[in-house]
Length: 472
Ligand SMILES: Cc1cc2nc3c(=O)[nH]c(=O)nc-3n(C[C@H](O)[C@H](O)[C@H](O)COP(=O)(O)OP(=O)(O)OC[C@H]3O[C@@H](n4cnc5c(N)ncnc54)[C@H](O)[C@@H]3O)c2cc1C
Image (cartoon, rainbow, N blue to C red):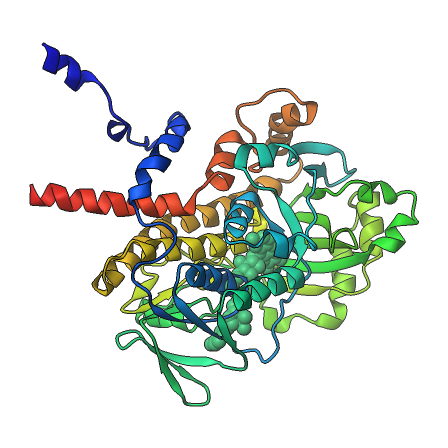
């Protein structure tokens, strides 16, 4: 009898995280934190020589995570001068939490802006139809702030930190070939360099991806959109009484309408007003004319909210950017080569998560390597990394495409139903679901509450349990 009573008691090991979306086991995290102390901490016991191709946001974040775990990291970057194209970028809470854990808080703080909220506005008149409170909600719920920043500042903060933790960076070094079996790269100058592991963070036009896919070309899906990127001088906006209110408090404002949207926020700690204007585009980027971009952009948004039109009227130059989404790849790794960031999972920027996914990739790769107890386990560490990250980034590609559909309804019954479903968040009434994926409680927890290192730990634990089951 006593033994029957004993066996009916649940232990923490019986509490498997359900497959359905639920946070009912969140309370066990504190307890598992003490049990996972038996797992390797950040420091790797097997220290590797690692070559990284590409010093973009993803490559640098990955290099920092790997170097901090004790690996020797050298980056080869094709451009002779480091930098970032474009103006603003959002650093969502799932990314800032990782960046802070890597010691980047003090490197980022001088440059970031913490917006109070995200307002979705009706295209025609700017009426607020959806509202996500970022302050204090995101810090309270996801234990990290939501930031916006100038890309150049983000890049230079990462670069400085990488150098401070001992990462070597060689500029003007274009990788033209990879040998995944030997673990080597060939540079454009003909020199070869080898290492225990080659990580390629070489962006959307990745050369390494073709090697990993072994002849299976990935097809990009043109979702049928392009974006104009522009910056407006806040000095001009401040002197216009119709516009100055937008700058009073840092915030993101997104105007949404038929097939188009305009995402805006201030960057450079409030010094510039950043705009991304998405619109339908089916033609080949090779045929686009930079000299007509400004007038084309203004024509695309004719008849939109007069306030927005006034801001668009202040834009003096713009760059048109193709928006592409990758398809789910079969592999991210072959032999001693692994790809990550946009090389592995390009996505449309409608969840503002592309670089955040690359930051998550970086910490996840480092964590998976930290579980190795011998160099023979490299393949296992890479394959666990691939499985965990493919799932997460694949879902984010899907969520990003869905935003493009949710935001772009033409006026009509679907648009009205969407706006009604967002009304409670504007009115401050409790809600259980929302078409605004920044506010929808289930999407929020999945997107911003995700713990990339824990996901890797669980996958390693499951692989060890599976081995024990096989032995029995
Ligand atoms: C309009 C727009 C808005 C966006 N907004 C956001 C946002 O708000 N938040 C967010 O998280 N993401 C956003 N993104 C996505 C984000 O910009 C990308 O996901 C991110 O920059 C990808 O980083 P990466 O390091 O993987 O690739 P990249 O930034 O492309 O870096 C690749 C690096 O590799 C180098 N390289 C390439 N080939 C070679 C080679 N053969 N040898 C050596 N070096 C090589 C390149 O020179 C480059 O430095 C946005 C994207 C767009 C287009």
